[in-house]
Each structure stands twice: as structure tokens, then as C-alpha cells.
Length: 281
Figure 1 (cartoon, rainbow, N blue to C red):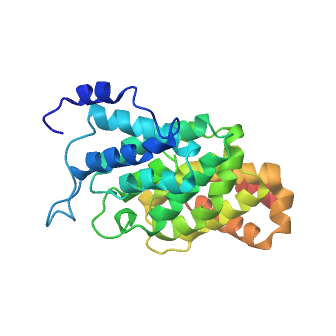
Figure 2: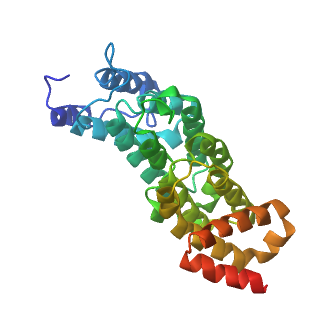
């Protein structure tokens, strides 16, 4: 394929029936994807590095097409398309990120389609156990990949109509945070999303998630500096709108007080103001 200009490939494949239009074309498109990804595989001794470059016009076009098909295929067929891309992990992170860009935009625009969160859940479950997505070791792009998969870098995409989709994904975040809590940017984004959209059960889960770094002695000043702004907004939102929930849930209230104590110790303005309000109550 390197002898063909990417735009010529795009032109040549236009008009070929999609697997959504004609299921018999699924093997053709699956083979096309695998052939495309073949050149992106690490060679001998390259497992610990990363692939230079960026997706071609052909890669981008193909990923955009695949993303639109996923909710309309069976979950088994959909996985055969997204799994080999996500399996590239940190090695070909630019390609994975470009695919996830296409997928998340499709997911948010078609969130009313019940198949969308199911496909997303399948992706998350796969990545949770995939070595190529493990934050340990030499995968320095793991946090970036996870923020893209969970759409944490694009907080504004999460709107009220996406709450049902967020509820489906939320239970998996507990497992994700077991290995990814050190990424303060991700937790900060998550706190901001919860403050805007979460219902009472999700807020209680959120407090539990944020307690993970609060109990670790290795968290640094820089870590909490990244997190404190959105954490303070979340705690203020919970207190002003869900005080009754806190008082009825001892575990959630304990986490709330612990996190507020951290903000007070850091002399965070909103945290100090909230402390006064809570103290008077």
C-alpha cells in the first residue's frame, strides 16, 4: 500500500457497500482494516518504544467509517473492528487517539442509540485488561489514551442528555481508578463532569473514587494543585444540593469530610468558605 497515495485509496474505496448496507461485505472491510494496521505493528525489539508519524488520510477516512458502523453491527462484529485498533495501545498511540476521536464524537451524537453505550462498555472492559493499556511499565501514553477513551479531555461534550450513557459507564470507573488514580488530570476532569451531571448514586461513587488518592502518602503538592479546583466545585455542589444524601450515607460523608480537610490544609479559598458553611450547619 505505501506505493499508493492515501487519497487515491480513499477515492477507490468510495462506493463499496458497507457491512451495514450489505452484511456480506463485512469480511472485506475486516480484511481491509487488518491490512491497514499491519504496517503499524511493532517490529522485533520495538515493543517498548513508540511508532513515529501520524495517521494518513486513508487511516483517518477508514477510522471515521468504522466508527459510524459500530453501533449498527452486532457487538461481536463491532469488536472485530475496534479491538485490533485499540490493541495498538501506546505503541501507535496517534492512530488509537484518532480512532477514539471519531468514536467519541459518534457516541455523543448518537447517545440515544442503546447500542452505543454497550459498544463503549465493551471497549473499556477490553482496555482494562489489555497489557498495551497498562499504565505501569514503559507505556507513557497510557493516561492520554484513557482520557481519550473516557472523553475526559473534552468535558464539554458531556451534557444532560448523556447522563444515561454516563450511568452505564460509571461502574467500570471504579476498576479503572485502581490503576489510574495517579493521573490527577483525569480525576480533575471526572470531578468536573460529576459536579455538572451526576445524580446522588454517582456522586456517592465519585466521593469514593476521589478518596483513593487522599489515602496515598505519595500524592504530591503538584497532584493536588491539578485537582483542587474541580474538587472544591464538586464538594460545594454536593453540599448545597445533596446535603441530605451525605447525612444519610456515613461512608460518603466521611469521604466528603476527608477531601474537605485536604482543601482546608491547602488553604483553598472555596474549600475554606465551604468549611465555614459546613461548620455552621
